[in-house]
Length: 428
Ligand SMILES: NC(=O)c1ccc[n+]([C@@H]2O[C@H](COP(=O)([O-])OP(=O)(O)OC[C@H]3O[C@@H](n4cnc5c(N)ncnc54)[C@H](O)[C@@H]3O)[C@@H](O)[C@H]2O)c1
Image (tube, rainbow, N blue to C red; front, side, top):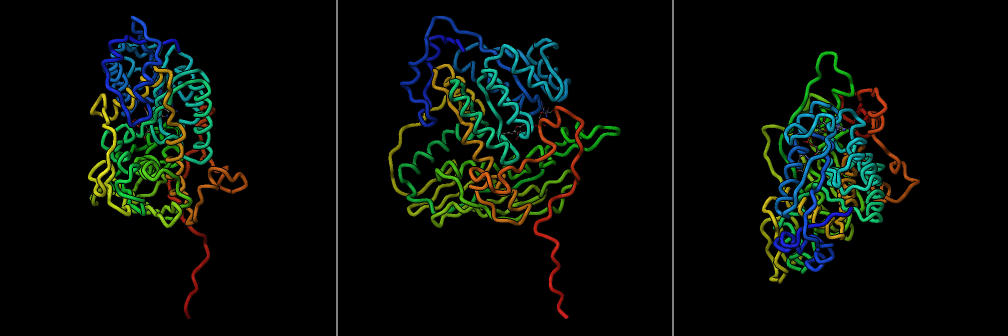
């Protein structure tokens, strides 16, 4: 991309020292007098997609760059058009259908923002990187091991092509989390020996089937209730907290053993709650809890216990006094900051690439879900490296390309049942 940026606006912004872009790298930019208008396309024009677009435009303002929406795509054309209309985009640049992403990536956009249900991300990201676009990808980025590994592979392609990928795991672009991560790395709490990560809340929403509606339309509208599209809420929502655990510990869990169940949900095939023990090796375990049931205690966050102190996610940290570099942000809003970091890194020719980290965190969540659904102990190596393992090639269906080819068959709206049918011994 031959983008140039106004020198004064670039130098006027502060640097994000914690996120991998050092101040010195800013000078790698080909600074010229004029600022180019950045062109952006959006795939998935729902709640987060519209917000991500606003966040991108706000980030451009902060960086002193003009920006323009040039294409939108959504499974439903009306949604693509509504977003387009809000930005004065002509209806012929707003695309509907499961192949709408192809038209967005074929447009003249420099950046593509993706906020569809996660099952579509591997296919959409591959197409966008193939087309040479910098990408913002909402979390999670897959619903099965095959999808998560595809994101990692596409991330490598992006690196080779000098393209940036930033993910919607916004805690990694939040000053307080960056500070605590730096403090932990500097030894503030000593060695992390264990912890708890939680997202206990309510079901965000459901959609009910309309009369005469196709399976694809109903499943897409009610995607947050179907594992094949969302990954279940341990993946779709709790991935944020699991991502912090993986980030702060600096390694992936070796295995997961957990359980869960369903008592309240009325649509789809997901669980209401999960409780997973993640074994990070060396005697370090992280307990993951997530629940979506109205009228229950809410708790969202992370706690890590170290040999010298304790850290509450992006909050309080106690332990040894250590010094870390000051972390300066361009925006107090992490949803905006992640786009500032994306754009700045792309323009500086030092593209951030978060494909691997977000894919791995997604896979950690998927590992927990598989363990709860099956009742098995699931090893990370069997999802990531061991191509002889039964789970290595596990992929949910219907999958992204099934929707594109259509029609799809709706999965049964019943949750998984762990274990097998062996009957208990009946005492005489
Ligand atoms: N980072 C965060 O804090 C955060 C917050 C909310 C949502 N999200 C993530 O953002 C993504 C979208 O969530 P949302 O709340 O906006 O959902 P949503 O239902 O409001 O929007 C999803 C949109 O994608 C469209 N869509 C579905 N399949 C598509 C396809 N194949 N091609 C094109 N469009 C398609 C839908 O029609 C809908 O308009 C999810 O991955 C979710 O986990 C992240």
